[in-house]
Length: 273
Image (tube, rainbow, N blue to C red):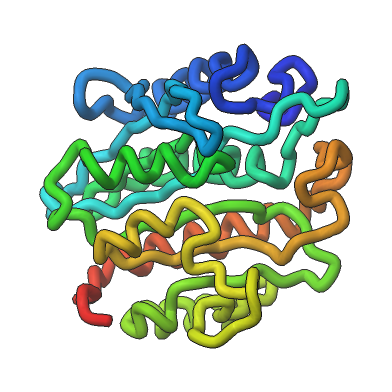
């Protein structure tokens, strides 16, 4: 509700709204008991836009140490930026992607009370709408050794679906992840559909690089991306809190948490395509 409120003015990277969102996320990380990594939660980065302008963004990064294998890391990510104000209208981005961030914060709070085996890094990325610039910066200079990152679980648009389904992208590229998705699909309250990641799909249908999992994949880090198909309010000023389906949203968040917990418990060998 807060992240998609008018007060954050659509959270466009480099604007006042996007600059205030990290403070809210940092406070949520602190309340959950996440530790800082690399000197603080806020990690700044700079990039050049498609028009040649230099912008500075802020990723918010925290982690929970693992009890059994703290030197191995699962990453759970979601981008908090959106489109800002266009022609006087605020694009609040409730589904895209306040939904992913809020679910990630809830997952962080739960996992903090049920310590994981491996360490878990939680990242709220900035500048996804500018070409996954926050994820690019994170992968280029990760706060831990890149080889110690087991995989990225990325959440982007998970709060509504007319069909009651959410897609899970990545099992084509990383087949060792498929059994975990299938296991959860058999018991989940929502429909989990692997797909949108095979060669030869029509333009726009391959989501391998459609969100912040893309830079991880390019670096050879396995990923699962959870997201719904585009709906009528996608990238529209009508993507507001009142359009979210709470029952579906909670069920999706629980399903993602279940998959993360399975992966943490079993830590499969993944780095073979």
